[in-house]
Image (cartoon, rainbow, N blue to C red; front, top):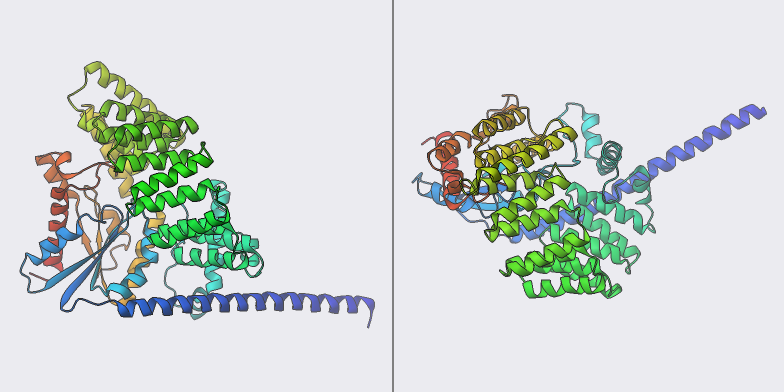
Length: 542
């Protein structure tokens, strides 16, 4: 054999070994992921078997954000049961404050197993931002379907998504997975790889996978305080407050001068309503690090909940001295002023938040609500100055981003209504409607499709509902008119007619959505009645 032949043969052998090694790695990783998934599923099935199903009732599961949680569901149960349809209705409220559609859809399967609903009503999307798992339409290719079932394929998709997102939007606040991270996750000694992988899953809204990754990091190094902190925040995201508190305490047991862990513990105690203990935890964090602005902000929220507005304002101001460029803290200060009836100061704080970040949608919404409440209470000169300031901020926002979100346009319509400029109000309302009619955020669209597939597979009726004041047309267009099995609820005209006859304040407690917000009891009653009318007509044929 010639030297060239021997070299060629050796190269082929090396390439073969590398290919075999990669194949073996994928097989082992797939086996490990499937084993973990099987264990989680079995535990979930055990818990679900213990749940009692209410017999004889037609069960409706309501999913969404804070506009669902504790809002319209109890009104819907009363509305449906009062119609004497010969059916007893049971409504399950699975709204989750501050969440997004990725998180809602990710927990749908377990919700179906737990509650066994006959119907799911979804009103969601207002909080959708950032990266998500792109929707993949159904395919007839058996090979493609097989590949999509692989856990390693899904993990690789997450990795590639974050790489693409980092190229487009810059480095995110937390570590994101790369191809190197995915490989390192197969190394049982790489605790940092599991930490990064856990943060990746958490950013995607897959809290179960995130918790599993953080626990793996702790198996490798039980003294890793960062992993306990991460586990604490993940448990909090899941509403597992006892486990979250325990995780933060574990972090503090490793490092008792950890202000971040005390801040996290304070947040969990606050969630549980243990306000005195939460305040003590925040103060511990500040005793360790007096420059922890987030701890001051958390302490301010506790003071708000304890109805101590003077202390709350003082704490927010201390937070702003540490971080004067935090539009979020200015926004929270504005809310505090608003709750105290200090509307002029609230408006000034919202304006400051917008000067720092002209893209702060919540600040626009808050300012819109304030101007509406102040209507008729200011001098002509004050209104002229406020209008000038608002137009200046809008000009800067448009300069930075020529196409503002519909939520911002809606807030501007509300604001200029409050300032008495009906012409500008109508102009921005039209822009809001045009923006909405162009379609949903891609994450919202993808997750609606994913939700529909899950429910179709399980034989559960889907009801898609639009927010109050908004057109249902973009929702219908998601399926291009090809699916008549979905029930659509249009809340646009019923709310616009009601507001026209009365006022926004009668039906909305705030305007966080720009031109809509959390409903008052009267608003929730109107919303629930409209849903009940649609279901009575289109589902129960009465």
